[in-house]
Length: 357
Image 1 (cartoon, helix red, strand yellow):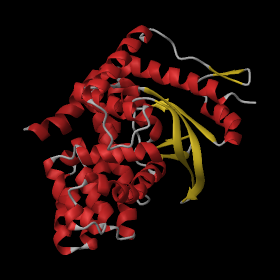
Image 2: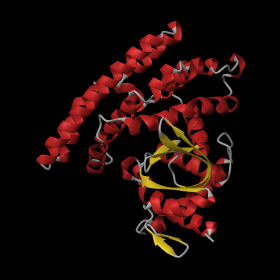
Image 3: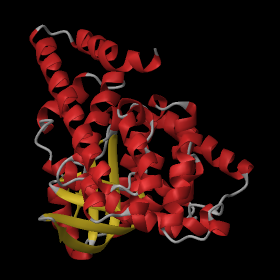
Image 4: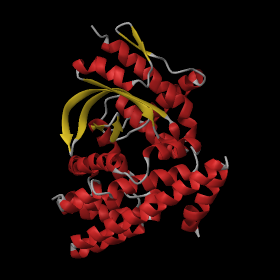
């Protein structure tokens, strides 16, 4: 009989090791936000629940003290029914634990941070030919609050993490995104008097964004423009650089504007609220590199012209495709010359510096 408690402890230890090693890669604000989510998960709080600041700070202090003792530790193999398994061998682990309706996740996220997950399976489905696993209770997780991911060609939707993710996006929404957010809330049927209550809005927003998360992953799996192996090579060669942010943004936009991605799904089904939320939560390089997305949605809020949205999706996809080809070509040139620094500087000068001019 598989010892679930033992497996949970093992996965949690690797989660803690990953956090200990990579906490320094976040900005102070970024780390605090992730710690807040981790605290709420550890204490089984709803996204909108808050404990006293002193209590949270004491917990953070203990967490950081623990991290200091683990900086040089290696990830542990998982021992399941006496079998020792590499912690990144997800196929073997999931084959062993699937009869207990459990799911194990392991891989590399932003800046090549190792990420681990153990959760119960709520249900399984197939969407557009892709297997999808919907998770419920998360028994082990790290700092990353990802609403969805792809592992071994299976889309994984983290339903509890999605609620935390949506809450954070709403709570820290920048000023420029608020008109789109308000428009989307009204399209959800939320009364004007309730628009200001984020807690009241959370269930509706999370439900609408369910397809956004799902079809983003479908778009990524379907994308043939940005070769997945080349993309991974670039990330591995240039972690923690502007180029990593750039290539992740371009790949995300390619997925969302592709024929099987989020924005095509929204347009095809005329999901007004989802379109508003997409524009509201578009930030960072995505907002700056592709300003036509918000500009088109701003027009849509007045005229409801889905044809203009379709034209924008096609135009943005072509733009992102051109950028992807340029990035791949420059990376190829830099690889031949063994000069990744040149690649980073060239892409920074070509795409990022003009945004601050």
